[in-house]
Amino acid sequence: MDKSAKSKMVNDLENRLDDFFGGEAKAPAAPPTAQYSIEKLKSAVLSIDWEITDQCLTELITETEALLPHFEEDPITHALLRMLRALARYIRKRKAQSHQDAIKRVMSVFTSFETLANDKQMDEQQKKKIVAREIQAFKKLKEQVEGQGAAAAGRGGKPTTDLSALLEHQQFKQVMNAVEERINAEVKALKVQVQTLQKELDSLRKA
Amino acid sequence: MAVINIRKKEVQVKIVYVGPGRGGKTTNLEYLFGAVRHRIQSDMVSIKTHGDRTLFFDFLPFDLGQIQGYMVKTQLYTVPGQVKYNATRKLVLKGVDGVVFVADSMEVMRDKNIASLENLKENLAFYDLDLYNKFPIVMQYNKRDLAEQGVPILTIETLEQDLNSKLKAPYFEASALSGHNVIATVKKAITMTVVSLQDHFT
Ligand SMILES: Nc1nc2c(ncn2[C@@H]2O[C@H](COP(=O)(O)OP(=O)(O)OP(=O)(O)O)[C@@H](O)[C@H]2O)c(=O)[nH]1
Ligand SMILES: [Mg+2]
Image (cartoon, rainbow over all chains, first blue to last red; front, side, top):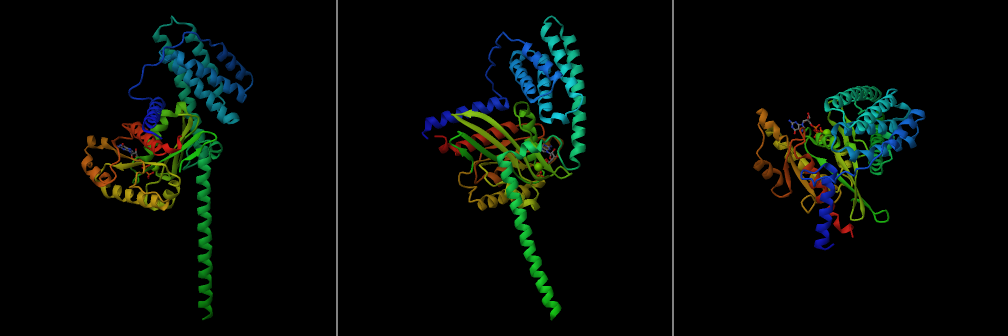
């Protein structure tokens, strides 16, 4: 690769890393495009109230994500959307094992979001109060979920891991295979050692 | 070696955090996880003993997206720092593309840092990698914050002399607990590693 191509690659990579980790020196965000609609989000929320499927959860996540950029200037509403997304991701991941209150939280957070998004005149104090309530309930749920996870994982385990998804991960599988190989090799070596010891013992007995 | 799939136009980069026990490797990954968890689908896996010591490794995968037409996937690992777990350390280093060496700035850790770097050299040699021949590595002098609490810490000059006089790797003064320079370290490590794989980006 020639020098200029290389420096372009490094440049691209550095920009990407800045975006990904939230760079120290960031270019100003793109101006928000004015038009958005919360109707689609609403229908996604209503459909999970009706029936919880992967598809509607994915839709809920997609719609939440589509709205996020529009509320970047409004941290309070933004927080609600992020909460909504976190809840949807959690339910999609845990499925039937989700905490029973999680869906209730989705409804409640959405209702608050809708109120804030529709009432642009609402004063900051009032907004903060609504969000504080949601955050508190969200935290409580999170604690309960983590408590559940910890109890299930028992001592030594970390609760938040979805192991089956991880085991799909190629490199992780490789490492696991390597561990298995190593353990097998060690067991074999031990067996050989035990055999030799056994033989030595036998010959000692005979002598 | 990085897994590079030309057909799928995908590059997987494996970066391993190495360093003495209790130096702050896991804390680095935990901080990073906290910083990016909202934008990644994956979870961080930690396998720990009760005392918070890493028993096997920590694992944090994420996709950086398309760069020059390639999907770049990064995988961060930590090894257990405790001397007795060398077999595991070796295993986790299999296929490593780049290293972050997390040194503990505490004065009492001086020899442990040096021994850990020496151990890294040996483990890499096991995979025919030469630490001292253009291997992508970033040094992180961690726990700088301890000075404020009156804990005796090594000066940067001493750390550089002990660990980096031959390597001449880029280094960062950091405090993984507060996150100071944690992101800067990983960014540098990823860039260096990808650059070292540049020939595959044609
Ligand atoms: N003061 C201070 N403490 C830190 C810092 N980084 C890590 N620690 C603490 O050091 C201890 C060990 O940190 P870990 O991240 O678990 O260390 P490790 O390198 O993963 O250790 P092993 O898994 O045993 O190899 C923890 O109690 C951390 O909170 C730091 O920058 N400053
Ligand atoms: Mg650890």
